[in-house]
Length: 103
Image (cartoon, rainbow, N blue to C red; front, side):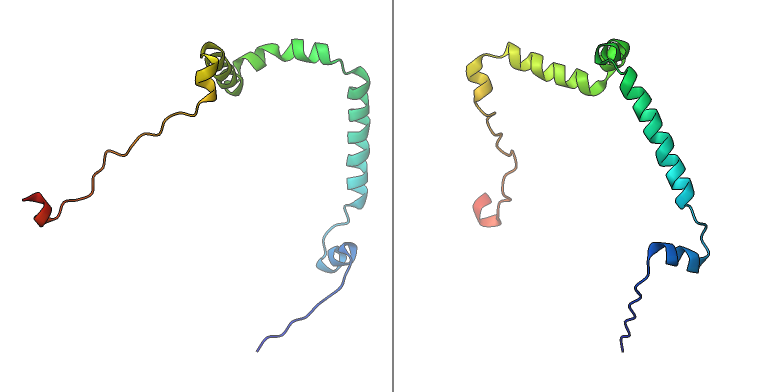
């Protein structure tokens, strides 16, 4: 036997029913604070200073090092070789021999 009950409630009503605190005011305060901070950063943001200030961090990034290594390898290889896909290696495994084949 299956019983299904559908209850249509708003999030605020469910919070009140479960006894959870009303955090709507706190959410509004946090959003207002974030908007002010993003606005302040946006007014003073200079992309050139950002790049100069973080250049050392970018140079030390493992992802950037891998990317540059790939770019350098591609630049060193002749154009014909870069266009061709790498050849497939054949498997060294052989099928097992049966007694009749081995004699």
